[in-house]
View 1 (cartoon, rainbow, N blue to C red):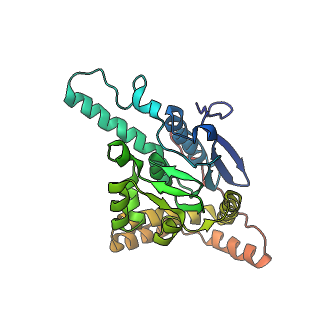
View 2: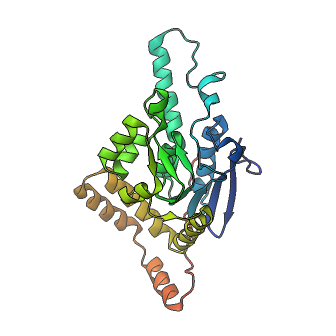
Length: 287
């Protein structure tokens, strides 16, 4: 489990923070990085810790081994009080509880979308089932040439429910979402780039990660307030009308437009050196 009160550790992730970049790496390659209970519990804690305490300016997510992630670990479905279990005989009250449990699982990835800082992800090998929910909640996706994407849920008799459809329909043409959802076919890396799911495809995993880290360093060199403002506005524009988006950015600028940050950016650009920008403040989550 990930414990933010002491040295951060997790059975599923390695977390390093350096040069304003938080690197979250899946670390169960022998199990194809399947999503165990610890995965679902630890990821939002890790992201919340980074986000709320302003520990970094950008998050990078990578994986290890042959596959990015093979999706939900089967033990989550079957063991103990797993998602398919329930001792309550009343179907309706059990259904209400299950609905809220699904919301809990959804929030594991929603925290990426709602983080104040950009989340970049590098995908190698299989990105299957819940892993599609995972990467679709990130800001930018890249892949290696051997990557493939699969809405696996249809192949095991269920409907994807942790974020694939609400987010994927905003990222790629609806016809492709329907084909992948109804058939469970694999989407190759080349086709994923063609339809806009990933920005670029790289020959090797090493080249992929190097590019993502280079991009993270470039983002981390920008004014943090301008970066978070850009993410807020892009997310808002995605979910609202053009008129609403224009009004919201005007309201944002009324309170957070910073001539001082602009002046520092101009100075740093002219001097060809990193700017000295103030960090985002830690969130005040308690009175």
